[in-house]
Image (cartoon, rainbow, N blue to C red; front, side):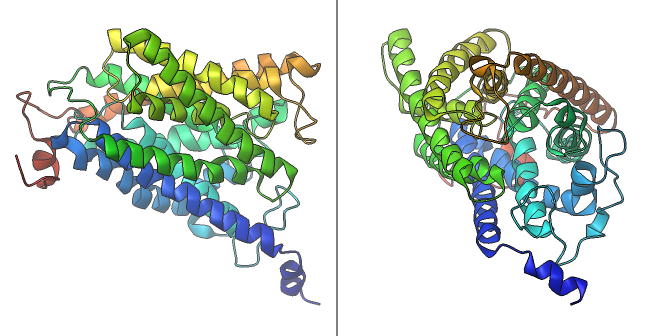
Length: 415
């Protein structure tokens, strides 16, 4: 029997089909994010911020094809980044090449496309921090450099078996560190660099768009978290359920906090709280019990609500990316060290409540490195870009039409 036939015999059809569905769900999250952010910004900049998400679907996919997947999952060069040439332009990948990272019987192509969807949405998350203030050409360059210099190295360090943090025992089931902490601190650096908006902060100009976007994000998050097991088993099921339970508890907790704090419950508050819960459970979803997910959801809303309130006093993080995604990812990544249980994932570690306090230290170190790396590289990237093309849009007046200026398009025909 030739090697091709032998390879084909190892393919698991059900796991492969499941992973393609999960990749589709994660892909849907980026249009969901576009609607979520689009509803939050002023009506004269909705197309610009939505386009920033959609352009990531095209350009980051090309980067992933050319060099990104190789940097992230190629044979390690130093535990920090993979060989940029090994999988470049899909070299060494054929239709029957199998993914060897687990026993799920997956073609390597299914892993490639699933991870590509993570790479697409991560830099798109950052755009909420500098909404209404950044030139499209500068954003395009930023999207390129940030993906290659921040995102890909942390994928390799934490998710590649040869990565430095992976070997040390750091865990991140679906991206609390890799996605949310890095994007959150990039958002913080971006907001500091571009400064405050001149345009009026007409928040929540279209609440139905926000609700639609949050619904798509919540729906897609099942593929984001449950799919990160890379096969169908009991951990896949528990990751799916912990995702929903954390989001539900976080959304309700946010409404209660907001009611106490402002006197009114708000739909946007519930939607924001649920996203905070989703971000916070992400690194823990496949390692913790359902009961722990409920606690994590409540903690997520408390931490993220007051983080948002604090940041708003000092910084123009337009759509609260740092407070929701950054602080959510950090909180969840550390809480893995508390609640992780090998009862719920036999391949995973035990946390403090189950006999191993060392995991918290490992998680904290990885979080700190990720946050510092992302903040510094983001600042340097923006500084360099600004030397060649202005990062900030010259807004002129509070009524400045960003969509007309940047795209020569308008979302609404009526003024």
